[in-house]
Image (spheres, rainbow, N blue to C red):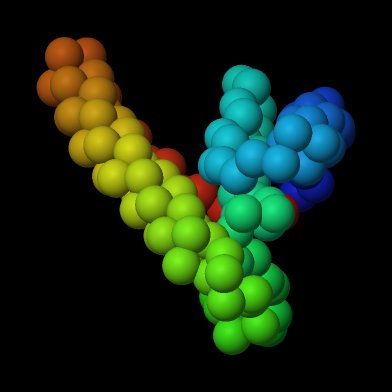
Amino acid sequence: MRTEPDPKLVAIRKEIADLMSKHDICGTVILANQNAIEHMTMFEASWSCASIFRDEGGVGIKINSTNLPADTKKKIVESTLGMILGQRDLLVELLDGFNTITKMLEQQDNLSFDHVSRRV
């Protein structure tokens, strides 16, 4: 069982984060190799009023729409909401597909997956 993040995946995650920042895009990325998984979600872009924060309670989303210029506020809030809802919908679809694949493999190969995801 891993006790440290996979350095290769961490490096690739950083490269992707840098590219996302450079091109002013948001998104969720999941990377995997046979030993580990790394993921990130970035909501920070010039056209978004959302950001990700970490504290002792975990991870959350902060929305800051109070200080936006009046002439662009509606567009920025709509763009942020569209981005968040679009990612949510896609992640729900992926979850359903992953659950289906897991059930099929368990039944097909008479396997039982005793898997627990753990953050390191």
